[in-house]
Every structure is written in structure tokens, then in C-alpha cells.
Length: 254
Ligand code: G
Ligand code: G
Ligand code: MN
Ligand code: NA
Image (cartoon, rainbow, N blue to C red; front, side, top):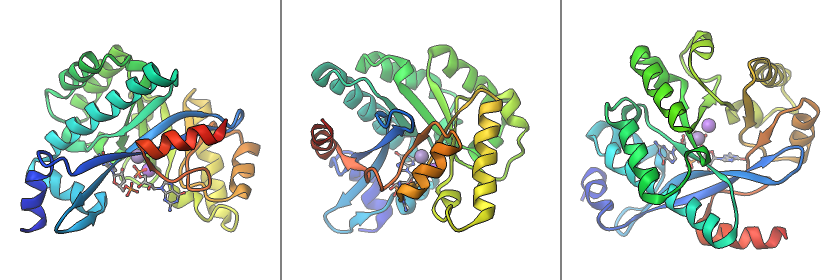
């Protein structure tokens, strides 16, 4: 079977799972959130990276069901950690533009929160700039309704999309996620340093939270600290981990 055909039956065969990557507060060095990242292992195809199957899911319309599964599973997991471990952390959930633009998106989110019992304030929807640039009027309305429910909104891969900055002043956004392409080579590239510090200042001047992605070295942590970045995420601290491994990771911190 081809990838597309396998993708169609992957949900019912329970071939997807979520990995969680910690998001660290730079000042206190504590975990204040995780980003949920989907993984697919198919018996025939093996591991298929999301960069390959998410676009396919978007083209075939399967993204609605898959996205809803991600939303439900991530919220359920975070609620479970609250109930069983007293761990109260936020979860970042990647939302495809196609999924975000569905007229029933907000009601689906509302239903998932009701079904899992998770408070909206623990959910951070990650949307790319490109995702916000189509049908701006509808986007604004959707974002306002999500904010009314109490969710957080992050701009994912900030700085890499085709967009103007003007949406920042109209859209109710909470967080900018600095794309890892600006962070990876931060210590050697003066342009990256200028971009990263400017994004941090832009965020703070607009009273937004800012997260650096793709943090792989202590030098980068120190740079981010000196420039008052709020949070970081990256392999230095932890790779994205399956829930059971994340639980082991947590116990090792204590
Ligand atoms: O985890 P990894 O670096 O392989 O992710 C690659 C890309 O896939 C990232 O851009 C990420 O945003 C996207 N991605 C991962 N999980 C999800 C998901 O649950 N939904 C959507 N829409 N995209 C995801
Ligand atoms: O596009 P998005 O930000 O949603 O994708 C996050 C992706 O970045 C995940 O697939 C994750 O595996 C990857 N990632 C997270 N931290 C690091 C890192 O420190 N280095 C690299 N190269 N990739 C990372
Ligand atoms: Mn993301
Ligand atoms: Na990103």
C-alpha cells in the first residue's frame, strides 16, 4: 500500500503517538510546558516523519481527523499528569492552517476541553504565520473566540513565513516562537544574533512571551539569558519524548 492509503487507516490501527518536548523557563530553569509532536510508525513503511505525512494529510483532508486526535490525546495526557502527578504544565499543539480554517474548529476545541476536563489555559495552539495570512477576517474571529475560551496562541516558526508584521497588532497572540533556523548557529552568525535579539525586544515591547526553539548548546542558553528571552526548547535539554520516557525524565530531574 502507498503512503496515502496507509495514512487513511493509520488512525484506526492506532499507529500514531505523541512525543513531548519540554519547554524551559530560562530564569528558573524549570519545565513550564511541553510541545506535543506527532509520530507515525507503520509496519510496512516504518517511521514516517511528520514533514512527509502532514502535507499529505492536508492534501487529502485527513488532517481534520488526525488534528482532532492530536488535540484530544495531548489534552488527555496533560490532564492525566495533573491528576496523577500534580504536574501542572501547558501543552503546545501544532495546528495546520487547513484545520484552523475549518468553520467548526473552535467548537471542536471546546468539545475536546469538555471531554478531557482540561482547563483551556493549559492549551497553547501553535500556528504559523502563513496559517494566519489566509482569510484574515475569519482568522481574527477564530482567534478571538479561542482567546475568549481561555486558550493561548503562539506563532510558530516566527520570522520564516510570508507575512507582514501588521497582523501582530491586530491578532490576539500570546507568544512568539523564534524559529530554530535563527538559533542553531547563533554563536557564529551576527545576523542571527541581530534577528534573535530583535525578536525578543519586539515580543517584550508588545507584552508577548518569547520562546527560542532548537537550543542545542550552553552558550546559546547563556546568550538567550543575557538577552532576557523567556523560554527555550531544544535538544540540549531534551529531545521530544514518548509520554512514558518523559515521565522517567521528570523523575531524574528531582
Ligand atoms: O517533530 P518534528 O521536528 O519532526 O516535526 C516536524 C514538523 O512537523 C514541524 O514543523 C511540526 O510543526 C510538524 N508537526 C509535528 N507534529 C504535528 C502535529 O501534531 N500537527 C501538525 N499540524 N504538525 C505537526
Ligand atoms: O516546526 P515546529 O517548531 O513545530 O517543529 C519542532 C521540531 O523541531 C520538532 O520536530 C523537533 O523534533 C525539532 N527540534 C526540537 N528541538 C530541536 C533542536 O534542538 N535541534 C533540532 N535540530 N531540532 C529540534
Ligand atoms: Mn511547533
Ligand atoms: Na517552529
